[in-house]
Amino acid sequence: MPTISFANPKGGVGKSTTALVLATTLANEGASVVVLDCDPNQAIVGWRKGSSTNSMVVDGEVTESNVIGKIQDYRSRYQFVFVDLQGTPNRLMSRAIARSDLVVIPLQASPADAEQAIRAIQLIQEEEETLERKIPFKIVVTRTSAAIQTRIEKIIVDQLQNGVIPTFNTHMKERSAFKAMFLYHKDLTELDPSEVNGLDKARENGAEIASELVSFFAQKVES
Image 1 (tube, rainbow, N blue to C red):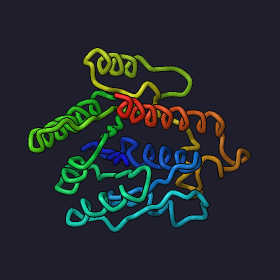
Image 2: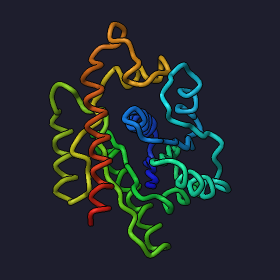
Image 3: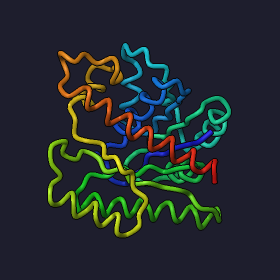
């Protein structure tokens, strides 16, 4: 079963949010999902301690010594293994990337974030050279305006597409519901519309990205 790592050398780009939205959405669709929370902040571990009844499993006891064994074990028992990596390159990140079937690189549409996304791609390429195999990756643009695309966002997205860098068609929009997941420790289906604005749109956004992720692996199987 696929292992998907979320990596970017820069913190604050939406790795944990993207991982949580995708993991809980897939779990609500009936998939068995486990998340290895390797971020020192352990935001997803904190979320799991709340009242959500979502079936997603979270493991926060991950080290560079046990990450490979955990990935191999969980792959045999879960349909999706997500690895939320910390924002600085280290041996744990390298080992997780090396065992990944896809590396998702979240980035905000800013020049600084775009540079760090390129660094993440370079880290993947270094692992490819060592392993002598390709490691698929895809950029997901995060925190874009739900109302209108800014000029800077458009330029950066166009540059990514023109550079033939694999990118999700769907962006993770800037929505209060995604922040509310961590505030209330619930998934998008459990949040109260009277307390959270734009909940329907956030659910649609999460479902669209999850659908793209599933389609990616379905196409791999077909090919």
